Image (cartoon, rainbow, N blue to C red):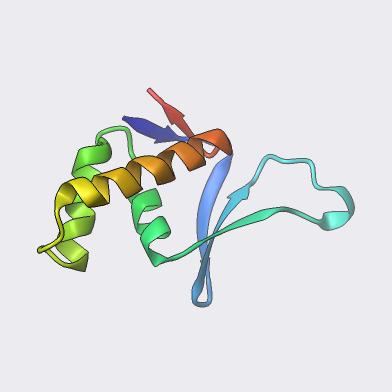
Length: 93
């Protein structure tokens, strides 16, 4: 299971999605944004401390197409969550 880092917020700006560290000390009013696609933002919104990797993969399969093996989606979800964790956006619990 994963939880979100309290310093990170997800925001939709027009047709794009971003993760933003709201507690970072931005020099010269510049900040770093981590852009997400629709699937990445969907996964971000399912990270709540109660959904594990498998349940997120099942939810994703249900909205995309249900004839894809959930194990294929699970591998991608696990890789994506590890990337978010490496970047400090989420915490494994």
